[in-house]
Length: 145
Image (tube, rainbow, N blue to C red; front, top):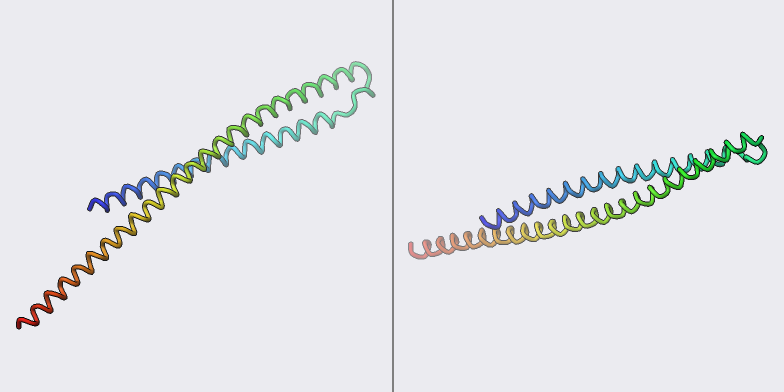
């Protein structure tokens, strides 16, 4: 009975670890989508900065305006690059957490499997012993009759 409780407890732990792994995978997928948005935004900002054309060929007021525009777009792109780098660092931490959770789940799964195999062997041994006892009793009853 104790082994059955151990197996049931290990099964519950494996299920909980699986839920944790699933949650971490979903979180990492969400972070990957955010990273892709950062990269798309950076590409658009770079296109905006280069697409505004050369400011030196414009009249002075327009050249100042175009230069300020490019400067602001490039500053915003730099901020986005910093944010992207921080986000990627957070993703690396999340990836390590996912790897750790997956490893723990796999280890618990192996322990559960070993416990189930041992329990099956014990059950098999018990059944064989019972059958041997019945066969012995039958044989003994046949000799005395």
